[in-house]
Amino acid sequence: MAATVSFPVVNMEKLETEEKATATEIIRDACENWGFFELLNHGISHELMDEVERLTKAHYAIFREAKFQEFAARTLEAGDKGADVKDVDWESTFFVRHLPASNLADLPDVDDHYRQVMKQFASEIQKLSEKLLDLLCENLGLEPGYLKSAFAGSNGPTFGTKVSAYPPCPRPDLVDGLRAHTDAGGIILLFQDDQVSGLQLLKDGEWVDVPPIRHAIVVNIGDQLEVITNGRYKSVMHRVLTRPDGNRMSIASFYNPGADAVIFPAPAFVGGAADEEERAEATYPRFVFEDYMNLYVRHKFEAKEPRFEAMKSAIATA
Image (tube, rainbow, N blue to C red; front, side, top):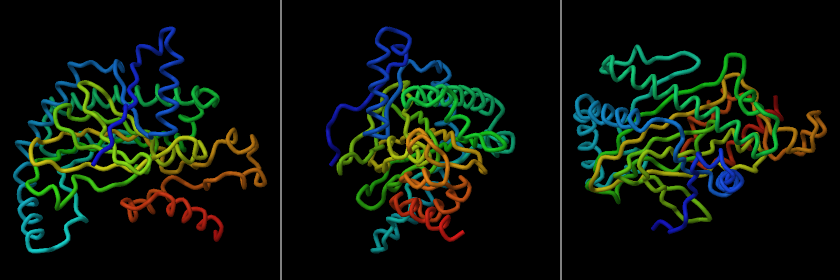
């Protein structure tokens, strides 16, 4: 059962007013204690968001629903026969890469109008991601641009979008929409269905609903920001529940470090020096992002702490 608590919501317009201190305090508390918050008045037009939603739901109905129904029938049949189907996710997804190179033109079954709308939406989400990274730098007392630079690697950040549908499931007890996990990357911006809920985060041992709010953008902290802040910000477990009614839309954009970016706790959080002796004060390891991702894909639905320890061990034996 999900706990009932006041979920952190930030009206970004207040960042330009005398209420800025209150808004930044909500962001600080959310990053440190929740790992999630929601943004209102974030600068992305409601008309664009409505068109993205309309096209995405139509695309699922035309091109993906029949294939998903085949998967659903197999999964339910296996579950009814006593098989454990907890290692699958009740979702239909496709992925769009934006940076360092886009695959938008190569996606099958996506018409030119949907392509153009997705491109425009991705551009807006990228700008918002980078604005948030600057806000987080200010919040953390880091020099302007520190986080964006930390993500850059030799070829800029990695940026992509996972487009998902979580259709109705007649047996919510049998299978989750998406199993509990933390996100491997940097900062994640989600445009979620405002009519169908299901996303939950784990806070203080309780599952908490991430409330659907029309035209909001949900933000969550990935593992890399936890590392860079040396644990001040938290990447938290979250999941998507299945529901017997409603087809939940989810468009999650991941603004991540470049593949060869070297990730490590900012010196500001480990004594202010970057030499080997001071680095030992860091709770978290230093590693190349691609190496972490190679580990993550094998252990996504497990706790993050053993991943961090494995990266430490890999460095120690290198």
